[in-house]
Amino acid sequence: RDAKANIEEHLTGVYHGYIDLEVSQFGRVKSSVTKDPSHFQRINESTGADVTLESEAIHLSGKKSNVKKAKASVMDYLDFVISRQLQTVKITHRSLFKSMGDPGRLAQIATETGASISLDRDISSVLIRSDDPNDCDKAVELVNSMMVECQRLIAVIRFDTSDAWLLSVIVGKGGSSIKKLEKDTDCSINIFKDEVTVVISADSEEIVKAGKDALENITQQAKKECIFIDLPESSMPAFIGKGGAGIKKMSADNDVNVERTKKHPSTIKITGKEHCVASAHNAVLSWVKDWEASHIGITIDLEEQLIPSIIGKGGETVRSIEKETGCRIDVDRQHSTLTVRDGSDADRESAINKIQAIIDKEE
Image 1 (cartoon, rainbow, N blue to C red):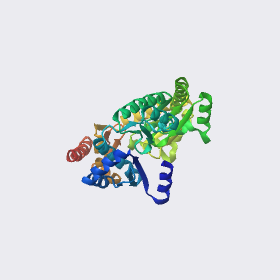
Image 2 (cartoon, rainbow, N blue to C red; image 1 turned 180 degrees about the vertical axis):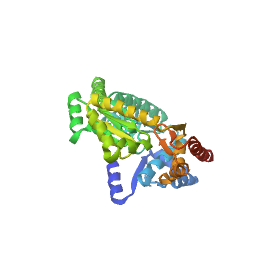
Image 3 (cartoon, one colour; image 1 turned 120 degrees about the vertical axis):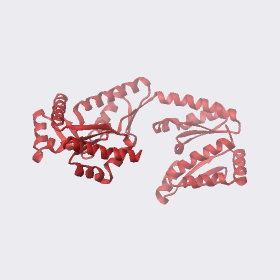
Image 4 (cartoon, rainbow, N blue to C red; image 1 turned 90 degrees about the vertical axis):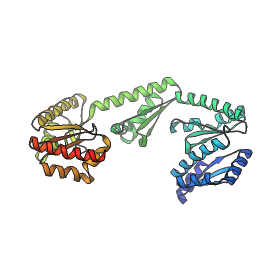
């Protein structure tokens, strides 16, 4: 049914989802909806998905994201109408879908408990239903045990978004690195770029741990051979130098490659051999220290949510303050700070006052 729904969505733009019910459960839900149709109407209006009753099931259709939201709302409604007769076990990560959706294992639990059991990817859960709440309770217990067992055989490693570049290192050119890692550790490794996550799975906890350790060794070494340093934005022209002379000299002096990142113009990337990168790192920090000493500044802390208001659309607000005061303003998003440099003491104080006025207005 999942495959069919995905194909239909691709062809028509409409995704179809279902919640199957026992005959008696469907009768109670139908009676409830007939008496008060506002329940489904509210879900339709709040999610944008159509919710209808259809042959011992609840049918949901619309955009996939809307259907998922609607299904979660319908499950809350069903918890009230057929309490304990339809229960769910939340799957902690989508990498567990395959093992938790094992037809043989689920059929065995269904046979032992008398409950109907299925995997629902829309709400990342195993659905358990029965007219007898006790059957559901037993099945929930067994499915939870199955979940614990499956979780032991995977390791989910989540990276900060700032370390997303490590994923390409793990994969390697043409997938060479990840293939070697899988062969060396006897693990299966999956990359979820949208979550900046790596999932390691194997047949035993020991092998999973070995794979996790091997992956950590790779990432730690990569971080020693590739680093990122944030510079004051107003220092970048001096650091780069005329025709790139400054940044080229820094690269040559330390036998590394230094480049300005495209995504963050005030951030530089240094790559090379471990000891060379460490040397360049110290050299850059020393350069920044000297530059800051000759460019006196006032630094204030900011609330992260206020930064867009201070910068303004396309940077127009901060540029206006710079023009009016003759100062340079550096905003450090990573550390949520703002530094006003250059100009006289009075100029810097004037710039700070203008920024504080924006902050007071927003607060």
